[in-house]
Length: 202
Figure 1 (cartoon, rainbow, N blue to C red):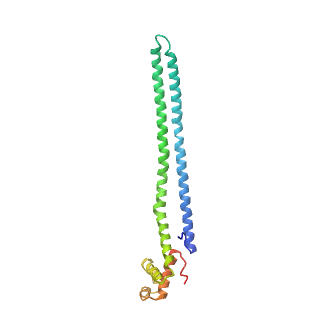
Figure 2 (spheres, rainbow, N blue to C red):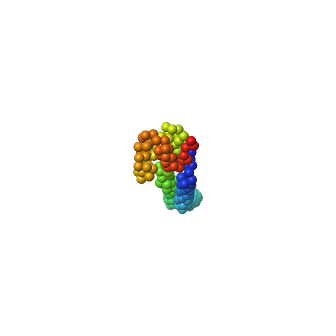
Figure 3 (cartoon, one colour):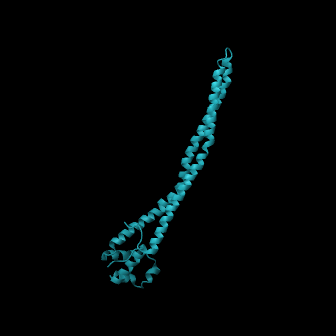
């Protein structure tokens, strides 16, 4: 499997593009981590609220227990403490729920931030890169075979701009149809050059 072209301009372009893609992905991963850390900080108030609510509820419950031991009026005195303790537990629960929500956001928001950049890499850059690798492998395997060079010449005739083909001569297609070896070789070299590959070793 050949990852990079033989010819310097194409190979340099491929290497630079690959490096830029790696840097692009790395930067977006860093952005996602930063978003995660920032969102996680939003959980601190919820944690403090939960701790404070739990502490107050515990203290009120203890105080209510002690007041409840007062003879005759103990039960009546306990009710306000029990109600306040329940309210404090509600605050603690609200703090816990806020932390859960922040935890979910800390997972979802970084994934959303990464989705578009990674989609560009997976659905644009990677298919183009794999297609070049596949075409280069086929071209290298057939470039030294007469039939393979004929296929490369046909590919050049079918895909290269008309102006580029016209510069090779007004009857280049006729020469290829006639089996002119020089025309076939010139067209095959044109296709190999487009892929950034060296010519035949013949």
